[in-house]
Length: 151
Image (cartoon, rainbow, N blue to C red; front, side, top):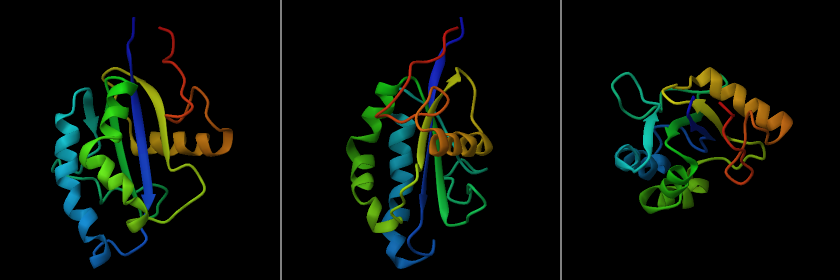
């Protein structure tokens, strides 16, 4: 029987140039928040650069102003607990200080077989699906989720 884990992509379009003073607080918070994620109960994997650092040099949709964060978790409860607690919650509450407000889906979840590490291309496809089809078992949101596939 194959077990599944939730994968999540979160994107955000910068409001300011990456090296601007307006993004200083955000940039300084990345390493500490990533360290909290890495140590969180239920954390499995996150997208990182070649040196294991934050993935701010990795972009989606060929747009250098869109940052991407991807992760895999043991289950949705572990992901939700991390997202809405502690330092991540603090950053989340300030997202409009640093990122554009957009109407289209910028975050998606989907189920991956345990051990699978999603690619940026895969994440882009899930976001496009969510944007065009709405939440389905192929790509969904925390608010409208679906169970993992049957083995």
